[in-house]
Length: 176
Image 1 (cartoon, rainbow, N blue to C red):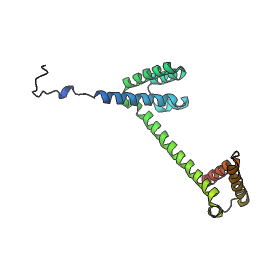
Image 2 (spheres, rainbow, N blue to C red; image 1 turned 30 degrees about the vertical axis):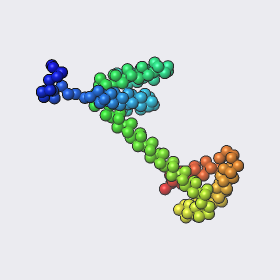
Image 3 (cartoon, rainbow, N blue to C red; image 1 turned 120 degrees about the vertical axis):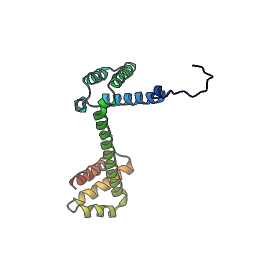
Image 4 (tube, rainbow, N blue to C red; image 1 turned 90 degrees about the vertical axis):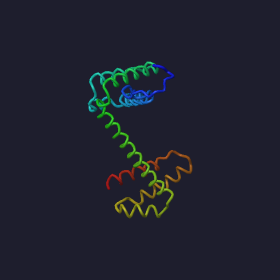
């Protein structure tokens, strides 16, 4: 092949994935391998992984040295690439559901924290709204907790009442 020859050639048959695409795929597999190793051992059998990969995950967990673990992770990823993507569809789906569940739990926690802050900063109006939604709530106890939480926050003391309000709001939401 002449490098100075500018005549068009029909090289479409040799075109495969680019080097960048291969690298991205390899890094995706390595990321999946890291996620699988970090999962609790009881969840691994539910993912329908090949037996040799399950064994390799177990061996990787036993390695504690940083560099050795990095090398073992690379080996696990190499073994996973030999199986192809279709062998890990269930695992990717399960890990994706975990991320969704974690996002939902975080959003739930933020809503409860916002409700607690509203109680602490909103005064009687915020308490009145909560009492309207939950008429069976112990008013005296909640008012006492709110006063204690404000005092704890101002005095930089441990936030016991602050946490108790959060627990109470969590229980109320669970009843709804």
